[in-house]
Image (cartoon, rainbow, N blue to C red; front, side, top):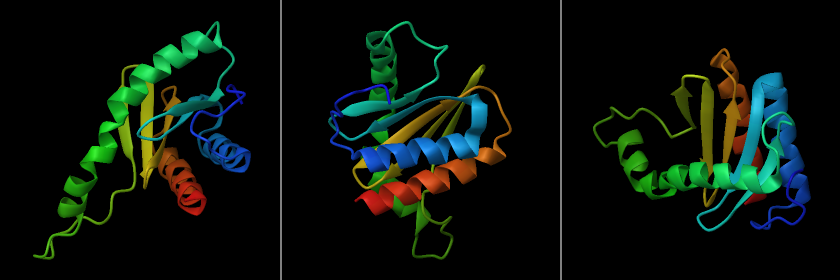
Length: 142
């Protein structure tokens, strides 16, 4: 774990479970895992070759968290889209994958908590396994 004191008050058990589930699903392409709430975030995992210091990692991940926190505000909109009364619903929200030239960002939200997982380029099918396992852990941690 990169942070010695969790700013989000995530339990060590949940943090370890999230890292384990993400690493199992995404393998060595996993670059980082960030756990976040509407008010704070913690870097749970960071691949060793990425940053020179904890401060540098937190600065970069802080910018990413600010962009992805919009997901909490999107909740009511996602709910309306997923369960319309006319029967054309697409089902509940599961996770978001953002495609970039050199990798991916996966956002998983559950209640007032979420995770961001960043990876190198890879087969996108692995995201579903990792996101489903992490979402289950977040739900159990509520």
